[in-house]
Image (tube, rainbow, N blue to C red; front, side):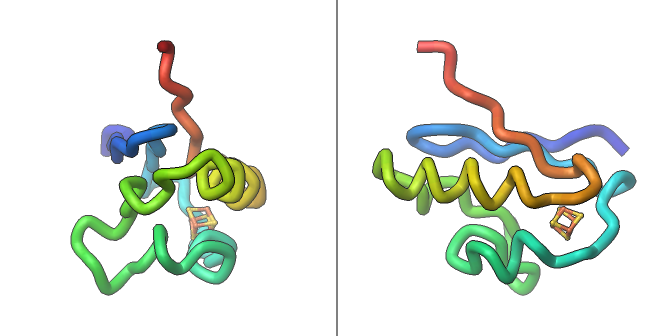
Length: 75
Ligand code: SF4
């Protein structure tokens, strides 16, 4: 399955389900963004301040599999 992109106002997040190890670091680390009961399950829109974007970067960095990636905006 292809990597999917979830766009947000500060940073985007991409996710590859085939790589995910379901360790749930993401849903425990930032439940306002990562909620497996919501559709889409990644709400990058929530991270709409520099502080929240930094938190999102930090939580994505805890993903052990590399399934999650921060996609920085180029501008
Ligand atoms: S932290 Fe990474 S490996 Fe764990 S559930 Fe989230 S996306 Fe999957």
